[in-house]
Image (cartoon, rainbow, N blue to C red; front, top):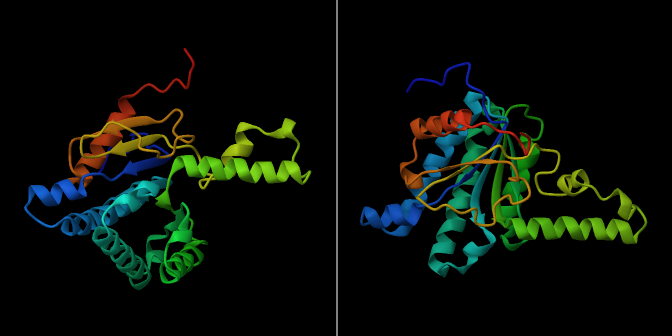
Length: 240
């Protein structure tokens, strides 16, 4: 696969809504867990590609606050798959990729074993200077914004913050992605054309790339296609 032209302007921050694992499994007459397993492999491939390309921030929507509504069997499998993936990160030493990994979302619902693995990975990769990978897990943008508002309210009540100093930057820095640039490009697979409670604040001026490709079939070639499409857009940020 040829690399992108060096003159191509890369988005600083890419968000991906990885959709279609279960539909892929159904299409291939397989149980849904096989779709999730295949999707996890594609995720690792796209992460490495993004890092090698020089993208600075990548946020992947791995598990939403709404995903708890799925069957107990599927959730149990997903938690097992998450544990397997976290252990693989540790075993394969993601430090070699120089990637800084962060888990964004409310992790309090996960087992102590999983949260311990997440903390270990975050600490171990914290000094890496390459791409920052945000894994959005038990993530919902409504909850994220609510949490930021609560944090601001507490500081106002305690006198640490004046209401007159509540700015867009103050809100932004209290989000899970605080001190990171807003997302430039959001990719959603599997034909859906909605944002599904993903990075609502951060995507105010994002470009969107929708593809009918199911996530387990999403390739590096199509990822490059999304970057090329991003380059064809004129981003005016509200200007003329």
